[in-house]
Image (cartoon, rainbow, N blue to C red; front, top):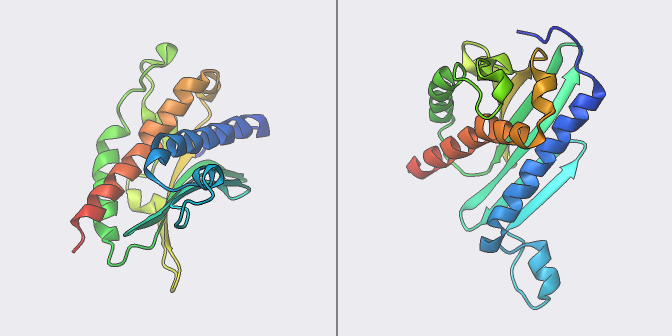
Length: 201
């Protein structure tokens, strides 16, 4: 399902700033457990490479984990073209023998139920469902792409179409917009990736 009207650059910029804030908040919430650029600057004698990094650029917003066996990057981006506006959540994965089929299966099972659940926190939108804001195809595999790169991290992307009907009301409430994107687009991918990671042989 495509947006009924073109989503303007101001709205896209607001969504992009929300994605930036999500990555920054995530980084700060876990930075105590990793060597970071800030810690190395404060303590020049701290040995070891940076284990946690964040990036904000034209490609989007990313947080990279590289500690022990952990070697992956989560990304968020908003894109717009003639076909509409999309929010993309991604994982750059270097973990060998990762079961992508199981990841897709679990994501499909989650969104099969979650997509029809009503939004939380938006008082004026009590009857609006997640699928009325972020569209996904009936077959989630049509919204997932996997780029396997020899010698580099594989990239798995999950793309949500952004629908415009209720968007003005949603972006008018930045804290709840941030919470909505985190809960619906980020947290499930993060949780399910971790679950599948733990089941690998």
